[in-house]
Amino acid sequence: MFVSKNGRVQVLAEAQIPGSLVKLLLGEGGGDQLGKTICATSISGRYTALAHAARFMLLEIPRDGKSEYRLVSVGSDAATDGEAITALYCMDIYTPAHKSSPAVCVIAGYSSGYMRVFSAHGHLLTAHQFHPQRLQCIRLRTPAQANSEQSAHKLQYSSCADPRAASDDSEEVNLTYRDGTLVSIDGRSLYLALRLCLEEAAIDEGPTFQYKKWAFDLGTPRVSDAAACGPPLWRDPLAQLVRGAHASSAQLADATARFLVAPQHGDAAFGVFTTSEDAATTFSAVDIAGKMAARVTGAVLSMARSYLWRGGSGESSGQASPGRTEPSTVVSCALAVRDSPRKVLHIALAPAQYALAALTDSLGRVLLLDLDSCEVVHMLKGVRGCQCAWLESTCDGRRCLLVAVYTARRGVLEIHEPGAMQPLDSVNVGAGWTLVQCPTQPLGGSLVVGPAGHERRAALPAPAACVLLGHDGRIALITVDER
Image (cartoon, rainbow, N blue to C red; front, side, top):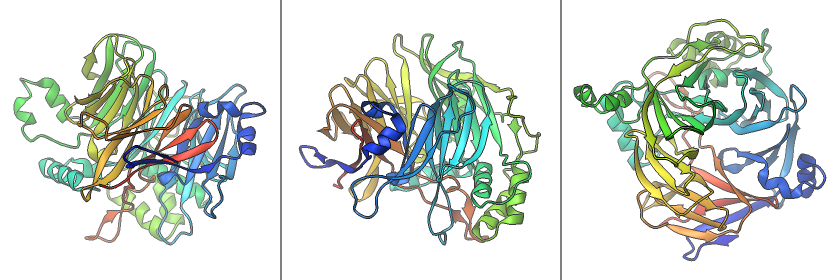
């Protein structure tokens, strides 16, 4: 265990990955390459997925006091020789409270562009190739939900200012490809499809779901990262009055979809792309919801009916064949930050209710960006080659957001409070770690359940958390004591 000087930050190694499992994943003589594997965790870090080449494994943290992780499953389904896993997401699936255990799926993205979803037991549930380029990143974006006084106030203002506020936003799984193409899978239809597969309900033609495909007017063939931010959390009621004088501000305020894009080439460090028009929707969520409502009972049945008759389902446009990809909807740039030679390398989105993103750049800085105003509200310097993640702690009786910055060259983990000039605390953990962000909400957690007049979200978001994966197989949870 590592502890900071004032004792507020603790890095506790929960368990060790056994050497036999490391050898199974990496092969003989690959033990020192564990830090270069792709890692993803479930909510609170109970499950950890690791991927190398075309193989992944799912591990579970021991509950019986043992110090080593337990192997849950191993998967290596690849379509062609030479195909490798390039992105990984360990996804919790919302299950009703009476279920014995929560469901977990592993989403693997491949160099061929394929996305494959596996059950916790390693069974292939569905596979789709939305775009024939390397799949770089997989993210789950959920609607903003109040889990602190600050975010509750922000959501209240937003819902009063505009009926299209964040409470009407829906969750989606976003896939980022090497050339900047971004596919947004409708979370509700994907949730219903995966629940059908996990419940082993017979489906005649396989699971289908709704998705949108976006492309950006970049002028460059590669991107370092791209992320969907959803509609603005704050909607300024005066934005309409200044449309003529400040067209870009009005464009940002009126957007129904926003994207942060970091191109690899050109003079722009990053750009904000917005649209107020809907993209063409592929696949049909109505068919899946109908099959779910007809074959599953209980809480899932009520959610499927809710999805069918509360709106939000698109029109069917037919089922795409695996060998054919649909065209993209091109989104224009609303704002570009040009500060050559600065290039943004990675985007870390905070939980949606905070409307913040941490951008690591090529000059050794971390930019904290307000997603609503598109202003850089804080800059951290002297952290070249760092990794960033978000976590939440209790400060003065309320939940507050913190950003963890790990600089591998110095072996130092710093905890920053957005806006503060100095780090909240720091701890020397040594080199060879990988900082991994934990999800905060399961797929399907934002669905509305309950009888009329007593509707509620299916699951409240968990506090943001992150872990460190060591090259020696240790996985350590980062905690910040209350103050």
